[in-house]
Amino acid sequence: DTAVSQTPKYLVTQMGNDKSIKCEQNLGHDTMYWYKQDSKKFLKIMFSYNNKELIINETVPNRFSPKSPDKAHLNLHINSLELGDSAVYFCASSLRMTGPSEQYFGPGTRLTVT
Amino acid sequence: DQQVKQNSPSLSVQEGRISILNCDYTNSMFDYFLWYKKYPAEGPTFLISISSIKDKNEDGRFTVFLNKSAKHLSLHIVPSQPGDSAVYFCAASVEKGTYKYIFGTGTRLKVLA
Image (cartoon, rainbow over the protein chains, first blue to last red):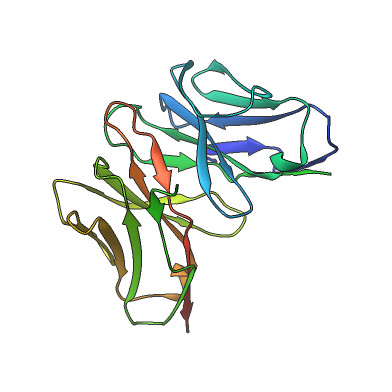
């Protein structure tokens, strides 16, 4: 039973399309995150949610919209996909937002935009 | 401006020897540091952490050392095992309250049998 799961694992799509990536955690954590790992291997935070509330919103284009229907799920919707969106997207969760708390990562979704 | 740097993209070590992975940071406000291990096609997994009030934390074969004056931390793995072959990321927290972590670019460790 996977702690943090993401679907799909691979996503190949054309420029201009809209796509979603789903994330679920069964750890009972309060906080969930989306990270992007680009071609240079930088792992950068995009968003974090705490109990369904948006807490961190880094400088991310408006085409990216996270949605948290409940604290166990955090989905990422991307509109009008661009070539530069090609990357690996990781979902993560942590027990809490405040105070030191390690993050548990999903397996990643490799998005390729052609 | 990369605030957390891992200047060695790769490292090879013989099985049984010590592996030392290094990480430098520039932001003196960082107060919590973590190391993650990542296998191919998997997400990073938490390994060990250290608070800025300590200079050493040990967990089995893994020890993290923090040198605040040098803004440097290192991960020691003793003895190294082939299963330790992975990419290792260090991460640092930017601010208290919301622990947003800044990650380094990773060091690929290869432990040779």
